[in-house]
Length: 251
Image (cartoon, rainbow, N blue to C red; front, side, top):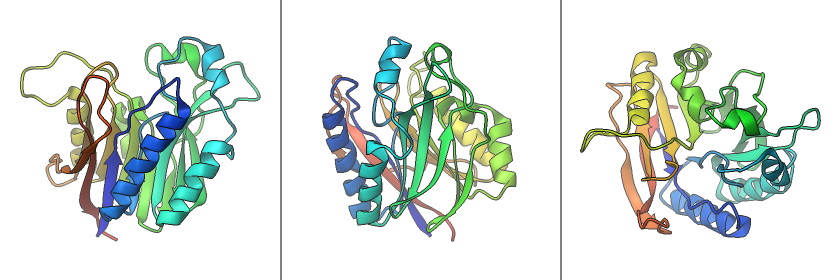
C-alpha cells in the first residue's frame, strides 16, 4: 500500500520565501506521517492571482530552475514522490505556462503544462499542447494534471486507460454557492471521475477567495476518505490548513 498526502499551504504571491517555508513544513509533516507521494497546490511556488501577463512572467522560471532545485532537494532528502506547481517560462511566446513537475526521490520525471485554462487564465497563460503524463514511480504508476483538466472526463479516462493507479491534481478551484453541509461541486466531480474510471485521485484543492479542503477519492464508490493529520499555518481568513493522508494505492 502507498500512503498519499494532499498538502495545503498558505501561498503568498508577494512573498515567495514565506511560501517556500510553508511548503517545506507541509511536505516534512506529510513525510513524518508516512507519506510516499506528496501533492502540493497548483502554482505552489508563485501563487495564481496574477493581474497581468507581465506579473506572471516576472515569476516564471525554466523547468530546471530554482524551484525545481529546491523541491528536488526536499524530495531526495525525504525519499518521496513530490508533485508541485510553478510558472514556467515560455521562450517561444508572450505568455508563460501553468506547469507542474513530478519528482521521485529528487529525480525529475515529468513536466506537464496545463492544457485546459479556466476563465481569465487564458489571458495570462499559454495552454500546453501535450497530454497528461503517466509515469512509473517508486510509489506506483501515477498521472498528473492540473485543476480544470480534471473536469474533462476524457482526460481522466485517457490516463486511466494508460495504466494510472493514482491521479495527482494540484488545483486552485473557485468558491461557488452550494447547499449547506454539502461538499463543493469540484470535490464531487473528482469523486465521480474516480468512481467512473476505477482510479484513485489525490486532489489538493486550495479554493480561491474562500475555504480550503483536500480530498483523496478512491475508486470503490469514490468516497472521500481524507484523514486529518495536523493543522498549521492559519489562512488569512483563519481556516486551518490540513495535511491529509490516506493509504490507497496498491503496489
